[in-house]
Image (tube, rainbow, N blue to C red):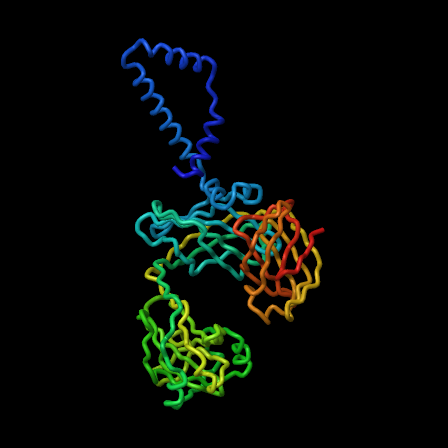
Length: 443
């Protein structure tokens, strides 16, 4: 029996009262049993049966909301709003267990349980999902019970003020499971030797037709309109233990290293990336563009190819290894129609203070703290990864909560970035906020 269930049982039994008459009868019978041969066994059996029945009643009354509290924090009850509404489709049951929102973000805790198969696991990943009025989302599995095939997932969306006191519909259309991920590994490619022995053939790519991309160069590529990329399928270099993608070309274009991959698997969300690493551990990360080609080899919108583009000179290639990183596929893609409509109730108003922190061009001029997390408001976030900003909450009992970046948004020229703990923050216990060593005292 787990400690949490035991605690619940102890709590429920503590409230169970026995009347004086029943208490006297029990005591008298226990005393008299010494004179009757089989009487003790009879009473013991009755007590065991009673206890089993009582525990069954307790188990039946422990709601999904209270189970969530034991996972997150029992003290979170003062912040979380119980919802406990379910939707079932395609043999999978979704339950919205609880929710809360502040001016910056909205959180919903949901569970997914497979009633007929094994499509819900500890690595389940929501694929298509939405919350009314919200635009950006993240999701994270916080608990998985293998016996019941149930995962509890925390969803976070930006712009919580749009939902406060209003009806919202949480809609899940599909999810992924059966995750298979390869750790980082050296491709073993001698970049300098390969580049010197080949001549890169380039083809034009209209950036209006790319289906996605990212990195420091992506905005420049979009502004340029058309860029040169490698001609497709000039090479076929396999990647160790990966059967859903291979390198289809490598070359230098306009003083940059291009590594082109072709994705051949059936997985709807197969993905991975590369980086360059030297002997000192210095890494160079790429920008990338997603595209497809037609039967004539002309580029078009699609996801069949990804071209990774590195800012590195050809003379430096001898010093770097090409590392394949986080190549991932999923065995299962499950679709359905799960939706629940409920009202988001705003939690208590947070604490907001002005500050003046400059982190190498990232200017933070306002910090707010609510039970959901810490919000940084400022400018210049495009100069660094949000994960490079380390945020922690110093409590009055000398404990420290380390937070991680969860979601960001742009509003009226300002960048708003939310940093969250696993459990809600009790504002009365907050002493100060630390941002990369800079202390912000709360008034």
